[in-house]
Length: 447
Image (cartoon, rainbow, N blue to C red; front, top):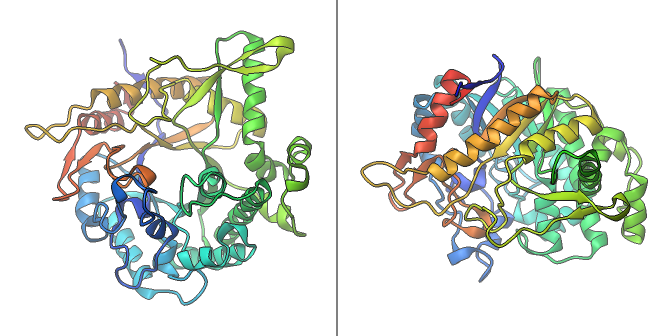
């Protein structure tokens, strides 16, 4: 078997998020986020785990970047913590927060690692939530100022910007079913309004990069598109899966790429449709440079009676990771980019997250032999390369995550890292997958 080679300039990276790794939750003027509050609600997070220490990356970033460098990682997707920069969300800028990220970017530069910065990865300042959070129009003005602040501060160090991470999760799962912070259960009308405010914030993020990003700055959104997979390659089943892709993702992608809400979405929403202000769609649909896709799982679809799509149930023994939601379907890294490209055009695509969460055992003789994760990543990457050969303009892949971290409502039990983290000692141990991925990067080939 020959290695599966990737294009010469393909980007290989890893990803993390500030609230999941930094710790120092109340250090140097940082304000509380909705997750700092939510994790203290009894029963909200497994074992009542908090973000207070996490991976202590706040104090250990330089050694973490040295390990990245040793593994040959040259691209790193990270996020900036909004409540570390503006503790109450819309008040005084915290210079200590800006200084921390200057130290981060200094260290990345020393180690030869290119930053890809996400402006918002779920850690809304709690003070803004107290004022209505994503329900309230005021969040868009607060985000606009925050985006302006960080792009102006870091534009000479950062050229790759991502506005928001996974709108679905911090709106639908945060305000619809209460699964994630702030744990609210609102009406469909309120949830739709949170989506709209998030889209306006995306537009402000793009605007900030265009105004203050400087030469070579690029910007895009990261979306966790829902990916239906045709049960086989029969044209009718491909068409059915594509129809479901449209239905599932139209709420976020149509406003950005077509400058409007689709008639079908508005018809389905009815009286619960979001309230739109003049100029919103012009801002939301401002041109971006790439699309980030976070893709982990999906489901199978076939054409039923009259061609109507049917979602197929998973049998009991269908393979999964240790996350209940993570059915292992490598084909999603083929069909997700393909459907996006067919529907919205040949915009460069970066897979900004993909990985697998397992309850890994502690190292034995200095090793964590996570063959399940390695096989998962390898199988998914085969499908990604096939999508590229079939015309999807995929330019890079960021493996989630660099190290085990705070996995939101699952706390510290679920491990996505390619580096094992002992949360008591903060000792880092590269897993088998890390060593393998390092060689993939070195050879620019799937081995």
